[in-house]
Amino acid sequence: MEDASAKMKSSIILALDLEEDKPTRLLSHSLRLLEATHPYLCALKLNRQAVLPLGLFQGAKKLVDRAHDYGLPVIMDAKINDIGNTNRLIAEYYFRAGFDAVIASAFIGWEEGLQPVFETAHRLQKGVIVLVYMSHRGSAEGFGQLVQNPKTGKLEPQYRIFAQKALEWRADGAVVGATYPEKIRETNKILGDRVPIYSPGVGAQGGDVATAVKAGARYLIVGRTIVQAKEPDQAAKDLRDKAQKSR
Ligand code: O7M
Image (tube, rainbow, N blue to C red; front, side, top):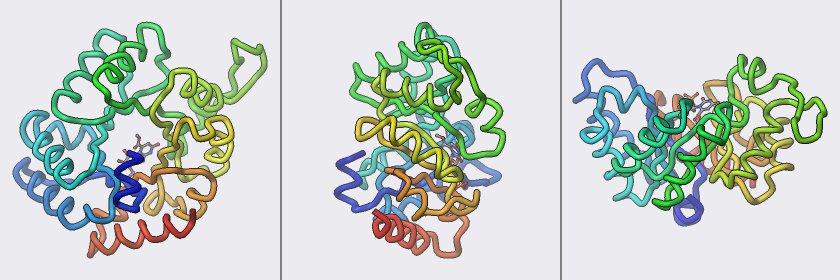
C-alpha cells in the first residue's frame, strides 16, 4: 500500500459498489470505472455484493488482475467474522483469487478467531485490516460501548481496546469512519505510525476529506462520490488532490 500510494501520489481507495441487473454488465461497468479512475487511486476495494454476482475466480479475479496491471493492490472487504477454521478458508480463497488483503472484524477475538487469518495472511505475505470504529450511526452500539478492559479493570470504549489489539496483533491497517474524526484522532494516538488508518465515509456519508486526513486518516475509502459522479475520473482526481493538500 505504501509503495502504491507513493508511486500514484494518492491515498484514495476506490470502493467499487455498483448496482447492475446482470453480472456481465456489472463486470463491464466495473472495468470501465477502474480504467477511468486508476491514475488517481492507490488501491481498489471489492465488497461481497460485487464478488457474489461476479464469481470469485471469474469476474472478481478479472478485476483483481486488471487492478494489478495498473499497479494497484486490491482489498477484499469480507468483514470476516466466524470461527477460525472457516475464517482461514475464507481468507485462503480470497488470497488464491489474488486479493492482497482482507478486512476482518475485531469482535471475534484472537484465539480460534482471527489468529488463523493473520497466520495465513502473513505466511502468504498478504494483509489483514481490522475494523476499529465503523462510519455508520449504529457503530456506537457495539464499537462505541463502554466495556471493562480485562487488562486494567477500567471502563473504556470498545474501539480503544480494538485499536490496542490492532497493535498487538500487528494488523496491517485499522478502519475508523471519516464521519467520526475525533475517533480517528484518538485511535491514531494509540496506533502511531505502526498501523495505518483506513477511513471510509467521506462524501456520501457526510465525512470531510481534509478533516479526516488532518485527524490522522492515512487512506480514504470512497465509493458513491466517485462511482455515481457524472465524471468519475474528475471526482477521483479532486478527492486525491484534496487529500494530498491536507497532509
Ligand atoms: O463512499 P461510500 O459511502 O459510497 O462507500 C463507503 C465504502 O466503505 C463502502 O464500500 C463500505 O462498505 C465501506 N465502509 C464503510 O462505509 N463504513 C465502514 O465503517 C467500513 C467500511 C469499510 O470499507 O470497511 C472495511
